[in-house]
Length: 243
Image 1: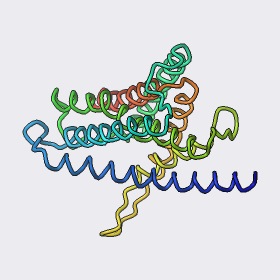
Image 2: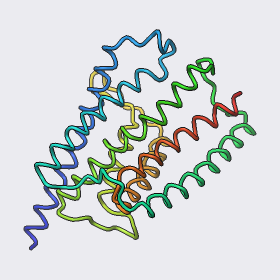
Image 3: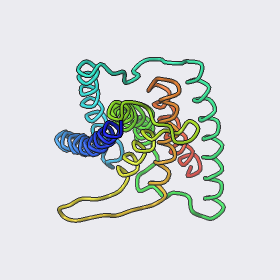
């Protein structure tokens, strides 16, 4: 029994680092294709087209990988409606709470003269382009790559979901760590390692919430909507306060 647990732990560690490597490759593939496509006429300020292409590419590759893994390993990545009642309840509560928090944050920033300054005009194209990316691509791409894929594969590697406390599981925490690391600016050549702790903490907390909802609702749909709605709210409210 002890040997079996040891093997599971070792396999889980290996899968964790393989997932980290896969996420790096997906990110680089996204940037590779975004650099190949001329989008400057559509997006001269480079604020939504490149990242839209990047997210679309990494999402498509991840979906292909998930389809192959689901057939090969006979595992469920929860690409279904799942528990609609739970999912909609979590989505409604999260969205309402996030809307209040977003407004409160921007009121505080306004009071302290810390509202974001945009280096592009807030015209129709730029607003629709950036909000369109946040609504239609940020959630689907990142939740598939950083939630559905790693959480499901970690449960498979560990042979079961491992609860830590309440609804928090080990696989959700590990997936959130991978999501947080994706928000660190780093490279090996040239060597760069820049850490901004607020976005990392923000990504970890929201990633953990969305991971819990993924497991409780047995669907990736509700975390996708939570992710997209929260991004639209934060960016859109910023635009409203800057107007």
